[in-house]
Image 1 (tube, rainbow over the protein chains, first blue to last red):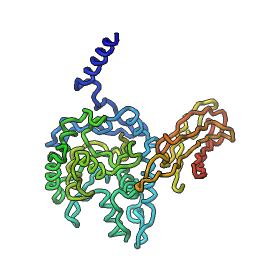
Image 2: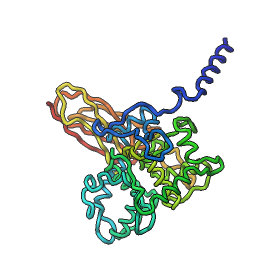
Image 3: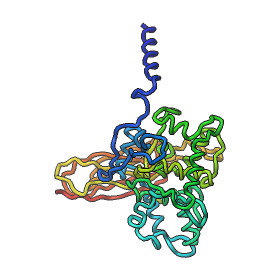
Image 4: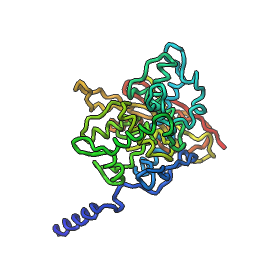
Length: 286
Length: 108
């Protein structure tokens, strides 16, 4: 009797180990509609030169409970911080006595769709610029305020608020601007470079093994259309460069500084890989 | 605590006798009292320990919250509405603060 049970248990365990059956972690066949109104694009045709057949949002790889949280902007806990961002937008700061709203007015109009086209080429600094850096540029050059430090709560909240104005807009960055193409190439190279004691590249997990399990979790394609993302694990918004650094740390490598040339190149490249997916900020992930 | 903003979602109106769904969310760290800070010392517990909802002064729903509940507690429940009136929500913090908000509902 006892042996029989053990034999059965072993059989079950064997079945679970066979790859590719329903046990693997997605992607699921589901549609993301926010507040019953905004139809989100979670599956898109890849841009030319993309290594995958279909571009998939990380939302499709999450459990049903996590997916549901994102369908309602009231239940989405990331919206609490987006609300903080809305307050910051209207708050005067710095020696010039200006707020974001002083120049840009109502963000719902002036920022609509803007977040979907970042990172952009910045002629003045001769490198790509993301929303965080654009906010800092406005603060130091226009407002006479101090730049936000990396991952300051204000930086995450305001970035999320700006990107949230593009909710539903497909990601589309312009590689023809300035030297964006050469940064894309640098990012492309980094994406396939193995790092750390575990000798993993971004592609090892997110290209070759998305849908498979790692560390008791399933891997997505690693698209970045939902950042800053609310992670249930941290119970707060997580910025893209924080996530990049977390991934690189997990390969047991030394990780580059936030907004360094390496990570900006990676942001350009990885954002391009998610071309066509709706901006989901703030996405909800595990 | 400062900067705590409770949010609730209640329908603007309902038919008499209708059962409605009420959603509430509040930003709060829900510090369990079991974590240690960078200095190795325990971070003191600070959670919301009680939530109540009243309708026209009568209790509708209440619950006690425990340290295992994660940050930004979300509470959803249903209530039967027989008359127009006001829902009053309150969250009680360990430090004695009470965060309150109200929502009116009309009868169709």
